[in-house]
Image: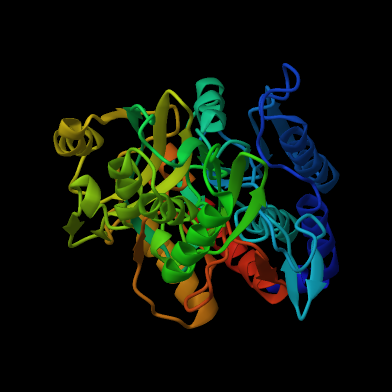
Length: 461
């Protein structure tokens, strides 16, 4: 029904997607009253809304927090929710992270799969539905958020001003469909620093991480080695690093050593696939002649299952809890570690905080929820109408009878009633969200556009 139009406009879909990917939309502080997340996010929103105008849709910018492109008539509507903000790019990219270059059939850019690319597939899917001339019984909105990677202020503000839909989906996870999402708890573990007078090596500062929902790929340590054989300390650092396979670089001054510890960044929903640079820094510091070895040992023992925090939990629906230590800030007064935990559907944020405080409190740590987005779990029954309709669309378009999934990620499906995540990663494909060299196959962009066009039609007909 829609495939012919999509194939005829393949080059347009690709070019428009490259256009949005070339905009650096890493979220930042407000730059103007109508730019609450910085100029890059504002530019990205205007780009897609202008495309919507050119396509003949009604469009709306909701105070710079989010916007939508709308088709159809009536009061009730179905929503497709995507986001245009992206996480920081990190280092080590093969191709420019905002170049949207195509190599071997893959489009390389931050946001290619999370979530600019799939959002553009949804936009062009709605265009295909419009151009086909089919009749719908409900309006359809493609809603674009700008703060998904941080605190979801975009969705909070949008739905303060706009009515919620009957239901819908978000193209921000995996096919065939996500029917349950783990809860997300973001919190800080804080402890005051102790005297370092007795130490040979004094730890002045430790900083690391880009975002709480990314495994940190860099941590910087500043050591004071005044009055110490600096060559001996450098030698010791090298030996410790070799024994733990810690990738690092040194900047050696007259009385200081700065250590840059490297890791491998991945999405916090699957931290076991990365290398946490904060934990690696802890391993190194715990072996040096420093004060507070218990503090550095604590960092080195933090695991991705939550055992060190006392929250190694599992359930039959969503599987095990995962834990990411995403940020660290240690100065001469206090040490603060920021965590992102994805927890099973049978647990609560309040319960987990209580368990951790009881576990860590006796050692002088305080556990407190921080300003980042915290969400209780999402569960939509497999036999619900929305799940069955979208599974049917996926099977019809792909021939794949795959079972619906659960994930540790948090998607906009939680922002509205009767919604799930639907694509855009196909079964068996590598997860590259939040990683260097993030990319998306051009053929998958087109394939998703076809699937989403059919899904929009089935939900709104």
